[in-house]
Image 1 (cartoon, rainbow, N blue to C red):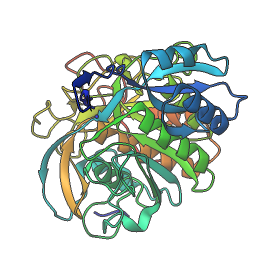
Image 2 (image 1 turned 180 degrees about the horizontal axis):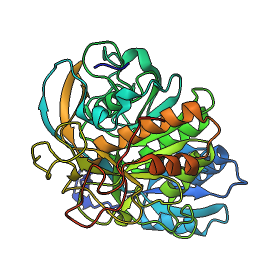
Image 3 (image 1 turned 180 degrees about the vertical axis):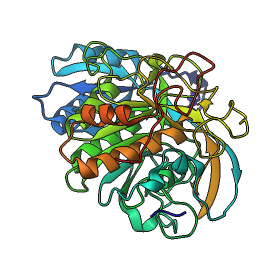
Length: 410
């Protein structure tokens, strides 16, 4: 039982009899891009040849989820690369960020209301040994409530040496997933699952598609080694889906996520916090490859709407900030969620970022008992087991048809 994101000066040439000023040509402006190569080319060799020929420095190199690399390119370089027969397509790199709002910090022993609301504390299944990749700001690797469950780590953020969390967001997410059942601090939905810290966002909670793809590439490469069955993506940015793994609209992030899916990893993504259709927010919009999660406002950890109102809506209604729409699959508690925090502390945060790890952990529980299930089987089973509208929660907004997670019998 569980407890609780050069200035060129003019060149001055001096002689004995005169002085001339020779101005250098201002270089072309560059942008960040992800170059996706055809599947039959050697990535390392081809990227080396292109960077040498077109005089740019490549950054991340990907071999698994996409075959390609990221780089800063000017218009001339970009046009030449797009004409290269070895290139499948080029995506402009975009910004992604966390989806949470921090409310307070306090350190007390407690059963988090979110874990209570989804009834994970009533389930003897603790997801033992199931690897869950937290693709985020990292995790505090020595947090006393998490360290025993952290199996591996990777950083894709430049100028960082480890996946240690310098923001706090990823540590919070990790606690909801798998904080230990050790009578202190908090307990996660799947308290015996294994955490894999994949740092793709910086100390400000920001990153790019290229950094996220770096993390996804590592996850797909190491899925079998660390038994990674689930990936939590409490992050996102603007974008849409072509419903074809990015092959129609040249979306490298989408292709990468589909490759992770095909490696046997169930991906759970935050719907976003803008009170808009989640179809305009990625990766939430990738309906062909992720389970998308909206946020429920719950104040007492119980169904029925009898708790006090929250800052984001009445008890047991959908959070006023939560994105919505047909791509959303399921909801989970996402308002005033208490969990682990950097500095070996604890914190209360709100956002679809907080709802998502409840579902990721529930997916781990399901995969513990049904280990050969596809991601669609995981999604459909969680949806089928969920609390339907009117049976413990309501929707005054009329925007949410998705059920609320229930982890009782997974």
